[in-house]
Length: 84
Image (cartoon, rainbow, N blue to C red):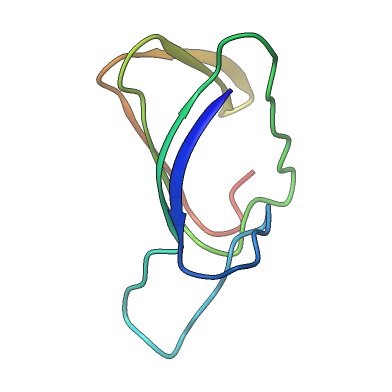
């Protein structure tokens, strides 16, 4: 995996960060390239913040509306807080 990213905090949490003191903050941005290993994430309870994913090239495999979906390059996916 190649991970190039910047983080607002030194701590990383799979569940994200909620900050109600500001109207908008970016916790992390960057890119990940998966080449040799399955890096699946199961967030049954979702995150506490929004997560925006843009598929630049290749494809991402997601479980959406109780159905497995493959989203190809050019797709954007938005997970709302607490959305699995």
